[in-house]
Length: 310
Image (cartoon, rainbow, N blue to C red):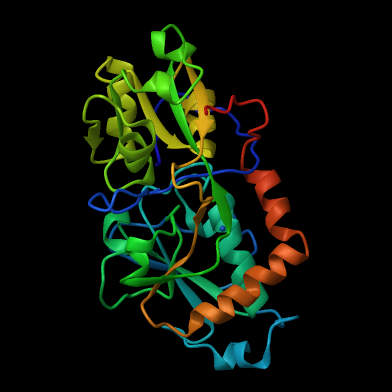
C-alpha cells in the first residue's frame, strides 16, 4: 500500500521491506540506471518520457539477452510503467526518471545490466495487472506476486521481500496492540486492490469490514480525521508516513501474511513475454554482486526496531 500527502516531508533514511497493491477481488496488495540530472522532465499523465542513459555492455548476461536480442517495445530501451504520483521511498520527487528511490534505482540497474536505457510511462496501479496487451515491457510499482495475478500476467523473480505494517496515531488505543489478534476489534483501512487490504481481511481478520480507499492519500487522511483507528501499508511506506507525513503517528508493528509465504514484489509483464527470463538474469546478477542490497540500504528504512506482531 502506498500513502502520501502534502504534509511536511522529512529526509528519509531507509532499509529493506514492503507491500503492494493487489487485486481487490482476490485480496492481495499494491502497492528503481543511473541517476539522471535534476533537470529530467517530470512524468505527466498519459504521456511517456524518454531517458536514455548511455547503454553499457551486459556483463554476466547470456548472449540470448544481448541488447540486440531483447524483445522490447522500443529497441535499445526498456519501457517501464509505474503509477502517478510515484511515491516515496519507492521513487523520489514524483519523478521516476531521476533514478532516485528504490524502485527507480532497481529499474535502472536492471536496464544497465541488460545494456539498454529506460523510458518511463504512466500505468495506473489497478490496471497494471489486468489481462491483455501491455504498452510497457514491465511495470514496477510495489506489485506483489500472487497466484491470482499470475493467472493473467507474468512476474519477474522477486526484487523485494515485503512485510505489512499498521500505522496509528500515538495517543490511540490501538497503538498499544502487541499482537495481530489485538488489532481485530479496531476499525482499519487500506487502499483498494492492495495486499494490505487482504491482510486486514485474512490475516488480522478484523471484526468489521475494512474501509477501502481509492488511493493512499485518502487512507491517510481518514486516519488523521479519526475515520479509522489504523491503516495498513508495506513497512517502508509506513516508515515514510510516520516519519514525514503524519505528525504524531507511529508504526504499531509489522507482520507477515497468514499464508506463511514471504510476500515479494515483482516486475509485472504481459503474459508470455519472453523478456522475463532476461530480466531475471539481470536480477540474479544484481543480487549476487550486492547491488540490490546496497539499494535497499540506501532507499528503504530499517525494520529492525519495529515490533513483530504474531
